[in-house]
Amino acid sequence: MKNVLLLTSSPRGEAAFSTQVATELAQKIEGANLTTRELWRDNFPHITPDFIGAIHTPEDGRTPEQSALAAISDELIAELKAADIVIIASGMINFAIPSTLKAWIDYVVRSGETFNYDANGLEGLVKGKQTVLVLATGGIYSEGPMAPMNFQEPYLRTVLGFIGLTEVETVLIEGSNLGPDVAAKALASAREKVAELSVTYSN
Image (spheres, helix red, strand yellow):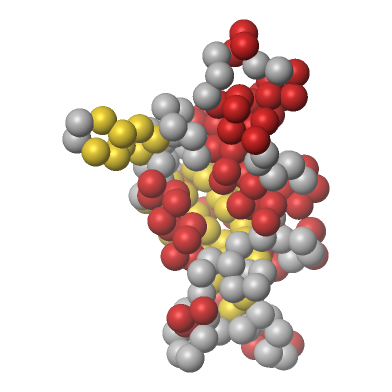
């Protein structure tokens, strides 16, 4: 049985195309033990001085506030490490990822837990996992004049690679604000790729 971690983050919640398509993929993987994080609903607090203090303080020396924030980080990192397949749904907000997804990243990208520096340089500690990005955009950002404004996929690939998640597939849903015909075509294309991936990941 494969452990699948599904993260959805669009502020449109269950109505978001990225959420719908990512959920379909997770549910199509045969024999999956599914853990879902609706980041738009969980609404983890953005990191603060208490969190920075917590990760640099031994457990028995933390304040109650620090302990609570460290516990969030520990739980999210444990879920990530336990996963065989990670599916991340993100709808572009102001050319980048939703702040809810950025908060999750800030809790899981943690020295000594998900990455390390040693004499040989950087080592990502979260390895050997298949990762799928399901990315929705109102316009077309994969090519053309808007491509330089796409900070969503490049950032996600960079930060995930930093912690060792380098086997990354992308499912794009582009042009949802360009009319119903464009949106329908984009959804159909995304679902075709989901069908291919679900077969691959079920094996």
